Image (cartoon, rainbow, N blue to C red; front, side, top):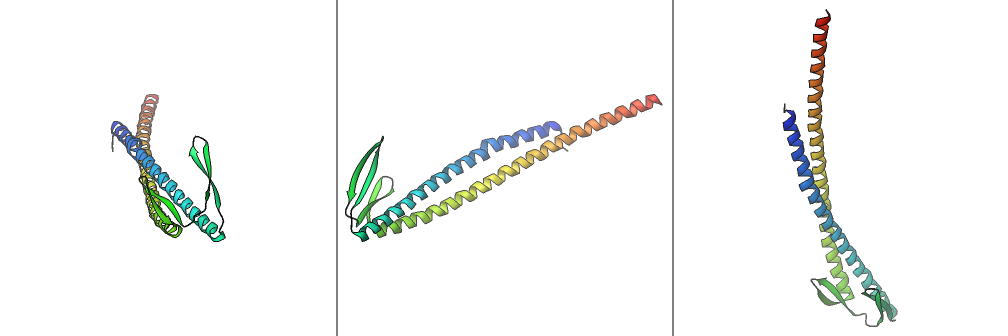
Length: 169
């Protein structure tokens, strides 16, 4: 059986591991997960835009769009050519694609992001399980310490009663 100082040291080590490693890792994984979900939503938006472009192309009418330039400044324009569009493929590069290519490309990116999102969700669950295990270990060690002090207290009480009873008899 461990003495109370060893148990206290172990509890501090587990608590430090919990705070310094596991919680930090969980925060990192959740940040990456949020980023992947944000990217996924952006690609869903690309799919919606390509669908809207296809619908306007079928109607053979111009589309009026309003673009935000930042700082509350917006500009209005018309889209009359629905054949080609520019898609941001990352790192500041844009590729000119027709709407079918853009739709297909967004499907590929969304599939990849779904895999990444699933990976980070599983990783977050794994880290949460580890956190729970460390908390249970800390609880168990604290329970051992409590049992130790309770046992010591019972021994002292029984010794006191035994001595007190002897003096009375």
